[in-house]
Image (tube, rainbow, N blue to C red; front, side, top):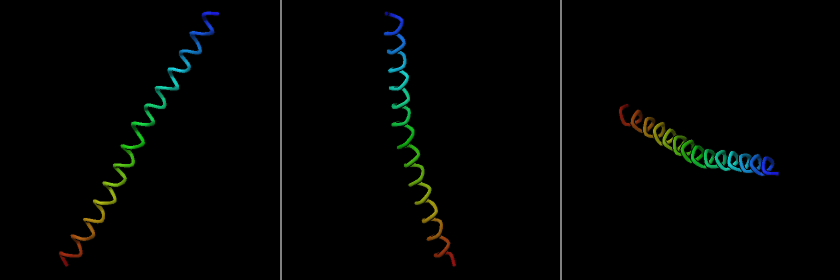
Length: 51
C-alpha cells in the first residue's frame, strides 16, 4: 500500500515541477520575443534615419 502512495507522490511532484518549469520558461520566451520585435523595429527606424 505504501509503495503505491509513494509512487503517486513522486508522480505528483514531477507534474508540479514540470508545471513550474513551464511557468518560468514561457514568460522568458515571450519576453525575448518582445525584445526581439522591439530591437528589429528600432533597427528599421535607425536605418530610415541614416538614409
